[in-house]
Image 1 (cartoon, helix red, strand yellow):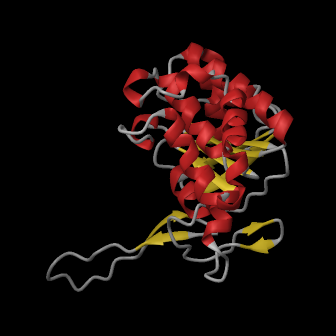
Image 2 (cartoon, helix red, strand yellow; image 1 turned 135 degrees about the vertical axis):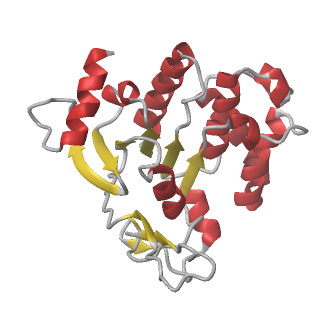
Length: 251
């Protein structure tokens, strides 16, 4: 798939400016229960790719499939798509309503997507709270009463509440301290093994992908230049990937 943005010409200029190509013929496959790491520097197109997959931006060209079914066309029902594919963003504070406590925040997606299962709402709520390692005492708390790591766990619980097949994490642990990052990654590993959910883990932190992801796709200037199964210098072919690994080794 590709994504171009039009570039406005300067006033009184007769020169026609070419569109800015942000995503250039990117192809990526994620298997069931697999975690793909997408790494690259800021501005490489990682977040734009997430927006395209989530149908928050229209494709310039290409197609997106979920279990062999095209989902980028208008005929696909959005409500079903957004149950099957969820997005967890970096800023958990903005993702949570300041006037809704944890219970209200988690019940909202459950009520929206499973209106006919009212008798099971509390059981579904309890299940996702346990999955993310929180106890019942957190249900009455509001976002300002939670730490950064706790807020991100609530956001992950909201994504899990609708029983998705795919979760996209767009720099979801970047704002957390290293201890919180480690705890969140361990939690996500455990959830993935139990639920067989596919992850697209977008990050600029190479260390976090090292032991977490099954495969790593390296993005550079809007293109996936390389896919790796290990951070092995002998496996690397692209110079940009090699520089990333060298920086990781120095750290």
